[in-house]
Length: 440
Image 1 (cartoon, rainbow, N blue to C red):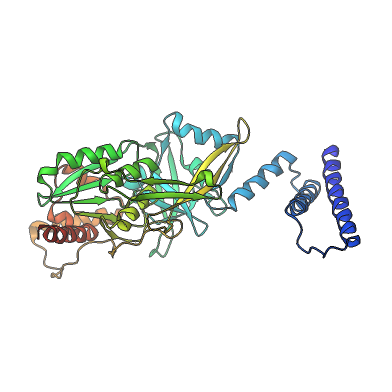
Image 2 (cartoon, rainbow, N blue to C red):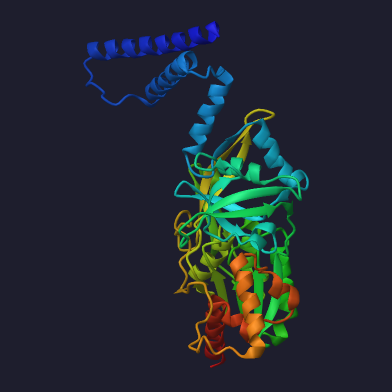
């Protein structure tokens, strides 16, 4: 410890001597006085300030933290203050990151991000424990079990929420429109999702729901379009509550609908990080009218697809403004057991606009909810009364299974189901209009 203190003091003294000598030389020369320090001098001064503070904290901090612990905390503070997605990963968090690809793990089925320094749900994945419990896009996670998230990084939060299947976890949620925080008791499970599924609407509209961008999304959508080509006059692609995934799948999916032009580009501080992804004519498979549904749970790859199709005038985007996650992170090992995750670039749409913190604004903004019908609310037939009351009891419990529709009907979306989803209903009306225009 004594050697470390001497090194810190010695380094600070060396910097002071260097600055003093530089000042003396400048004073004796005839050249004009330079008020701005050179880049190298500025670096030395900043490093001297850092080592001085480090030495003071090491000597006087009441908790008596070791130099290793102080450096780890300094790195955590440095990375977390750059942006919401950059972070320093110690041995435990780095191993946790690698476990995501090396084996199975239990989880809740939600994607989270930082919005206004609050841990926010980007979207729950359909059919997962979080989705069935009633977690919604835009929910702010205030506490995980009894631990506050106010000073927690995304990686720390994900590490706590992940765990062995069939184990419980409690989330305290702040939700817009609710006067009090909501508490959810959720049982972890192995997360398996159906990334792409299709339905027919009115026999001639192909509805394609994409829940996440895994490695088979573009191929599955291609298969669905070709399979239904003879009976489809228009396509509705639903990207609501899709938190994103693989960039190459977003590019390939967009290319199914366009034959030329830049789909997305990424630009960073270093030119080596600048990449542009363009459409190829051979990959396009359809000219059918297209509507894309989005909401605040649509993020990352979902925003690339919807924004690119919007900029290239290929589809009409309907719904609510998307989340605004348009940055590129890479994981850089710094030792065998530690790494940093650093934002190195941002995504840009064909028009040159950025997604980061802005999102994609739909061509037609439609809030979520049911289609309102002006009927006498007390005019309930006796045969429907029991069903109505059971439905209200389910709502009161807050545990409606949103996957029930998918489980009960694997082929079509009925008019009754459309009335429960005003965004989809609006999308259907728009696609019908586009079909009529194309027919003329």
